[in-house]
Length: 297
Image (cartoon, rainbow, N blue to C red; front, side):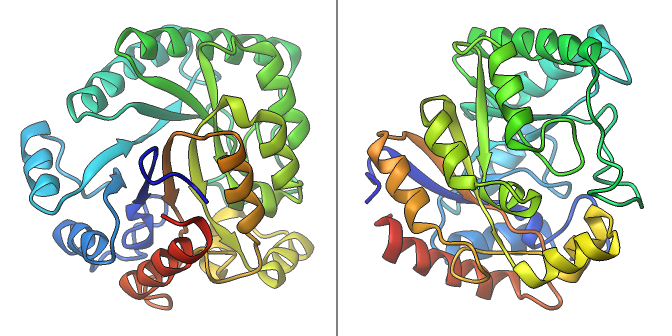
């Protein structure tokens, strides 16, 4: 069982309103989202596109509901906008999160990502050249150093449709970056979707994991997405992902491995799907109960 004094439970707003597919959950307000998060038993949140950009306003809305920000996605654009522009944007993002009390920054290199493009998520995935690996590693090491300046952890989110998607690519990233500056944002759903052994990756890098996304998959939808050349967003619409307690991913060994490695930090339910088909509050309650039973949180 995970230690509730060291491990905290959050949920992402993407189940209520999808940042990449804004029509999914367009009717759901920010206040409804965070109220239902709190009502379903979570104490943390990541940041969505409807969240106030003003620190004091956002803090007030969250604190009155017993919530705090644990992380927010950063789109690194080293391979499109370049090093200097990306580092400048990162510093602004870091300072915003730091003002909110967050200790983690989750980043993904989006400079040549296809995750939002209408192309096959498996057939047209980017593969980094040696020069691109060098630039990404340099940029991530610097972001890690900048995060450390504020007492924060910089984590890389391996993600479908990017150059850090497979277990081999995660290995390369870990080899090229400073283990004292660059950490892993471990996402069960993206590894399962990509066809990798999610548990093996966790066992290999447990000591470099500083943030966890808990996301289940529906294997039949993933198989169809691969066979028919779905884009990532088409797969999301079709229901490839769901919450812990639903779908086909077994979380018990993940929780056991985190506990064995004395994991400290946040675990975050993050399962994007159509809220018109999967009521966000009901699925949040389902996930909360499942995590209580299997992880002891």
